[in-house]
Length: 241
Image 1: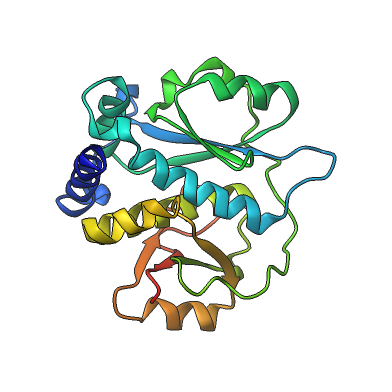
Image 2: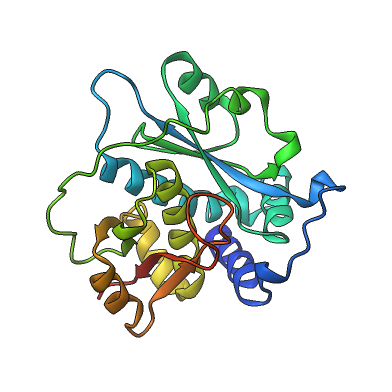
């Protein structure tokens, strides 16, 4: 657990001691624009449900941030550290067939063959295998997953924003990461023992607002680069119970 302890310490420090809103990204310095790439496995034949993909994406992000390698010295942790020093940008891409298989060799974490989060990098230095994956065409139809699990973290999405699956996946990743940073080490260790299982549900704006008002809720507000207006509350992460 020592590596998890250190990885969690670094995540907490990154999330609590600065505001990404204040981070100056300089277009003339491409290294200042950092992002975590997320590949969503969306085969044409028998595609997964939207909820399954969103849950896998949320788990992949938090698992990467708290991976053993994130608590050690080395390239994996250094890349995370560079990203932590800038905005928490995430970019979701569509993967299928050989392109999906090829990116499994790159540093990152895959969950249930549905989503893979990659070690962050400057957007100008994205690996060519990842760059081949399309950023668009990541949408999936809304589904009806039933009641959320009662004893795992819950990430709620404001359905009224009508985000694509790719955009929602990035936002869920923000939520899972920030929720872990808000947890105690003991709680994170218990969550890790369950392989960071979580539930994602898309709810009405009324239900979403009520959840955001709950004590301990972690609310993600988007910078507004794509799909939603700046400062929109996109997801709300809850520890439960």
